[in-house]
Length: 255
Image 1 (cartoon, rainbow, N blue to C red):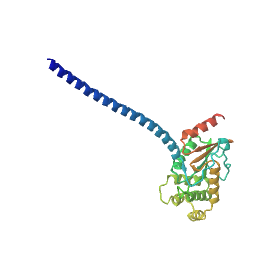
Image 2 (image 1 turned 30 degrees about the horizontal axis):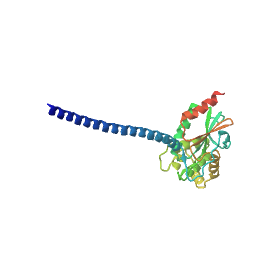
Image 3 (image 1 turned 45 degrees about the vertical axis):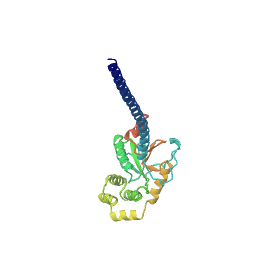
Image 4 (image 1 turned 135 degrees about the horizontal axis):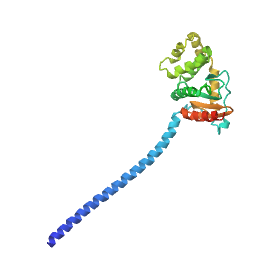
């Protein structure tokens, strides 16, 4: 009996040692897994932060070959050319609020922003107008400057409304020859249009817009300046409509 008890005790000891080893191993594995989860959360958190930063950057197209625009220290430091009859203006010209957009016609974020601005004008009919100025980024979009020149030709040949119709067409067209195709749709004299584009007749106007954009702190598109009386607020990138509405609603509430 004594020998049987001893063997039983040995077996129990071996079993206990086995399960103790398994438990220890599981504890180590659990600890490693837990640390991995924590590390992943830390990494994901950092990644989310970086993603947000990149997302903001992705909403603006910046030509890396252009010198950085002088960013105003405050909104009070922003300067922008006064809006005149020479500007392309959509909406009530006497509206309390103007949004000056510096845009690249080939910029995909400008296309998205074009829709946002269209919605804004519908929402604030008679209270907000939209001023279009050019900021082509030729290093990113080689045809952008030519399209800006073409848009100026359309506007000068056909007037303000035709300019905006042409812009709507360019931002939605998928035609390979969109520059001329959209002009034809408007019934322009194509010989006069082509001559205007070939001569770069309005190059000075496009260049002046680009200088104005840089002076207002913009070197990427879309770049917006919200004008409310004497107050100028810069809004870079394809901002959601809610961001513009926040400024607009606050201004209208003070009336």
